[in-house]
Image 1 (spheres, chains in turn blue, green):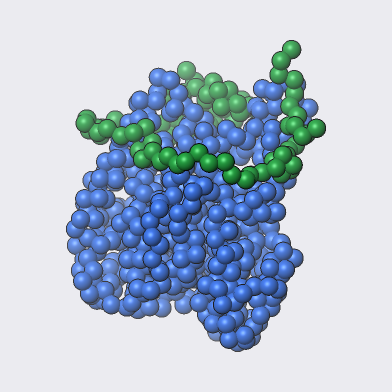
Image 2 (cartoon, each protein chain N blue to C red):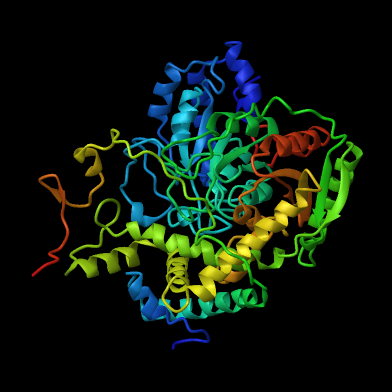
Length: 492
Length: 94
């Protein structure tokens, strides 16, 4: 083990080194800093880093705690006390979090060190991280392509060995889709499994925090630390938290997996489809029974999502008015001018579009036609899943219909960007859990681009999808593939 | 009515307290008309007999217990303008 190899370690492997006292938490921070200094100018994963604070915490880290001494990168939409929380927006310019989100308190209690804030689409609105008002993040597999989004900074940081693991947030696929496009593991827990207290709200009935990691086991380790009831979040579930790492076996005998026929659409890239077909065969060879199932309301999911998510966003983002925190327009002539110009100058185009759409679908005369109708169709989507989960343990699909697209390719057409989330959105609408794991590569010109396999599970059945994902992962080599920019790239 | 849908972007932006330039309003009008056209497919869905609470989620109550939270100083720590422990805004009442 040399300093060059260390950033490539999984959390579980780093943990072993720390516990054997072969390396100190302080040395880990130093090596990670060097790694970031070497590659982040190309990747652009981080918006801010407080090495001094992390080093100080490392000095008194207890490596025998579940995540003792492990630095975890945090999507810059989660409050970490004393650190900026920009949401990749100009409107939070200068803001410093006066408190820790519950997930940060829980990470600290488990011994982890919150380390650096990662880039995202502004207020998590987007699927490519291109909507960040502050920075451009590139896909470590091909620097001309997007890392996915909105948790693109977290996914790129983990992929490029600039982080051992990270937290993201997922409102319509924002953990799973960037994990797929960047070639790492991304878990969206069941709605209510993880507290949202201290996560800047985008769409409160859909948002959920989860891990982005190199392996399925690492995702289980982070979920162990952050899951659980929180009285400060009235939507958090008061249900016991199992040990998510305890059931990671390699045998899938007795497991029934459903392939939703509505997800196998024409728009899927042929290389993605081939990878998913091969993954289905692999899961079958591990003992899982594969059955075709139907989710008849699938084609309405994106439409429902863009009504409900924008409606909730228009209400949640009303708080950014230049009065209590963040950016304020200069020399306002009255209070309406203060609001109007602060929000004009502070928000980027996608955020404005969504606030306007959300305001419209909630407005008098249109509420029933749009918002109420969307809520009812959402209920149909929820019932679809409830009904198939009577027959199968989990569902399999691509995470994204395409591999990483090029920077700039979709920015001018919001609707095309929205359709990037076609396979991930329904899980948020139904409140179920989902995970994306690497399952192959698309070859484009001289570049290999990662493909993600999505597993969707019943509410609170994270242990099951982690088990299936782990069995698949351990039977393949995909998770061992390293991008060209990795700290230990494959030898020529 | 500015576009191909009932949405008048300039009007709704005023409701949402976002000033827009004319160019921005024009671009958004076109883009959001496209989105609204796409969501029209929800009109085909048979939703008779489906009853949901407005947010689709159970209502959760807890005891109303006072607990420690920000001091005034902490709450004001990010204020763009403040004085005497108060947020400062332009005059609202003449």
